[in-house]
Image (tube, rainbow, N blue to C red; front, top):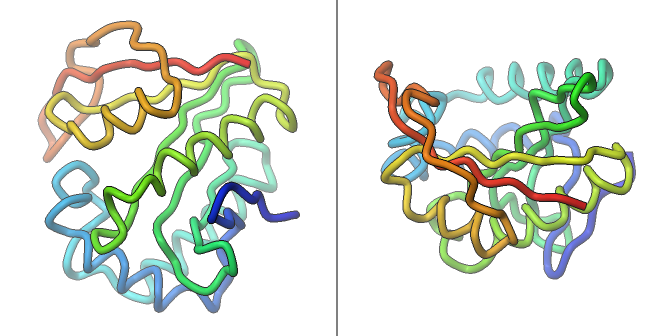
Length: 176
């Protein structure tokens, strides 16, 4: 698959050689990303990363998801991850998720990744709607959804589970 390029970023499928950097980025980000994503914990291992990469490859092959590593433009530094998942072909929409390693947050990385993924979803996958669902209280992700052009539609009760507990979430939508 051809990498997606966006201002100062390269989004591409994960490769086995990315696993150590990915695991390190996850462990670095427990204080920020881990609050919202249960997979982000201080015990995250190289094997966990390889399992995730294999899952991503299977999902991409089946058309169920398109997950990408987010890298610096030269592909040298892993900045985070982003993807289109939960693709619903019956209604032609999907979910868009993203995370940025703690040391690279608040620099526009997530916003640029969202914009690149949305362009890919509309142009290459012919989607007609992309949703971003943000747990209530996750102000940084909320800001990214808005900056990337997401239209706030509602606050949905019990929409996500955080630490095993149902929480309300803002639903944003992007359109071609």
